[in-house]
Length: 440
Image (cartoon, rainbow, N blue to C red; front, side, top):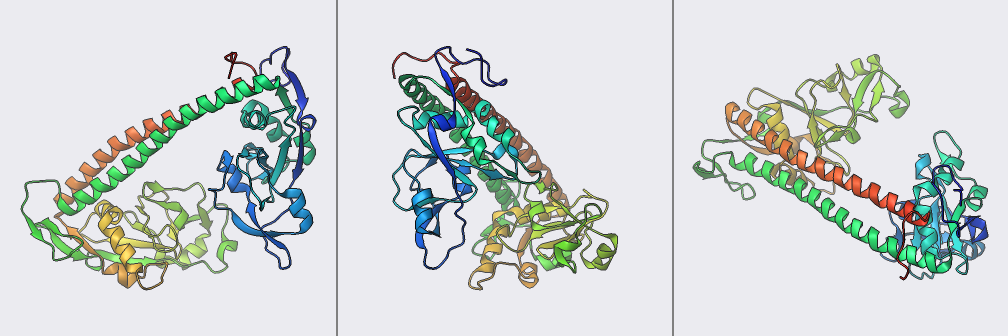
């Protein structure tokens, strides 16, 4: 039988190809997140609950919401329903499915989603779910979405989505095969993701160990006099941040806030740009030269260590090494400018270490604050070797980091290949491109 789509080869001659509305009912939710008095309290299944999970279970922390009686009747979620994303900022995130695998009494489908309810006499829910996971089938929904900066799926496009349909027995065989094979692949992916986490933890341990103990395991040690620091090499000093820097300070919000940002100009680095492994500049904001000049106190210089001092990313840091000719920072990013006693890369490695992160954490205890103040930061204690030994430590850690990053990159690449294999397997199975066993 000829294929129903140019990007799917052929489907078996005894299969049917039908629009989704021939084998399912469907509706688009209009339930928003705003809770209203005099409405019924429910749990709300939202876009991220579907986008981030293949299976909708009671383990998901659904948000609370309210609905009218009519909305409760129309948009309540039942076991074996399939939910898909209807709106997104990216067209290839349209139609992402999740299947409901448990019974719920008060779970309602939220806005930006659609509910698909299969007719089980014609199509098994698990088979339809896998069809919607198949890129070669779901791409129909992606191409039907409309918009420029935000994409939406017209309701009619859901109903006209073409689905390949074998008989019910074959649907069960195919679904069981996909479940078994994807479970094997998922186990491998989970193992490799745990490996990446272990690599990250090992990197952190190595940095903290070297920053507090040095490179020579035979060196004589002395008590630091600080309980959480314990012993340090006998020839090292203990310094406060204020004694090894010429500047500890942040920027300000430009007058007018985000309204003064422009498409090109002087970069203003914000907390979302500062990460432990580098400056992420894909969403950097820009200000005019005049505003940059008016914020001269927070102009960034080569070698400045940039530290996030507010919010969820507090403690994240990296250094500026002339990624731009000029740059500035806002009030959420602190500049640590080293003096002649410390190399800026060493200061950066120290701020990444457990002992610096511990001091950041302790500075928050009891104060109810979500930010670092400069006086507290200036009082942080840093164990400090000579400049020559700092350089040796930097080179050693960068060498170790390079090796660990190579392993991490290879592992990430293998995960990507496994995900591609998983996707291809699902598409091939639901379009009849794989020979199946004769029995489940």
